[in-house]
Length: 122
Image (cartoon, rainbow, N blue to C red; front, side, top):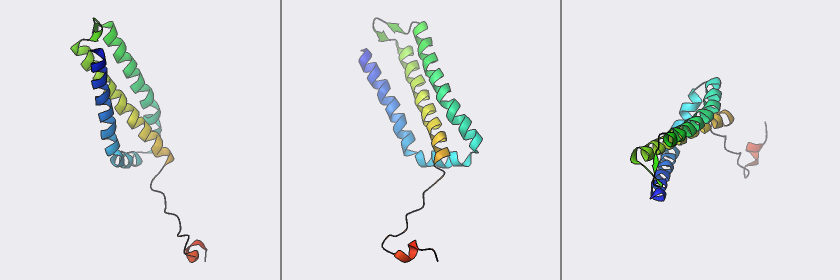
């Protein structure tokens, strides 16, 4: 039964990742609207905060006796799934913030190699 719980939680975490992927253009625009310092702080702290939330949440579930007879009780399974969703979201937003520092926007298309007049400075 534990593997079923793990599999369903994993499917939920992947689904959230796919939802974020579909909205990557919105995230890019939103990140580029923030100033550089905010993006640096959000990117750096977000990775660590989401990791601390994940580890702390799982630790609290374990300490509260969330596992009985080799399976997670319903509240523990729900808690682990929600904490995992928050972790995935935090990691995605942190990565988007840091990536936006490197890639400011769209790159310019290369000059047309078949038209030498565009490649020469006049």
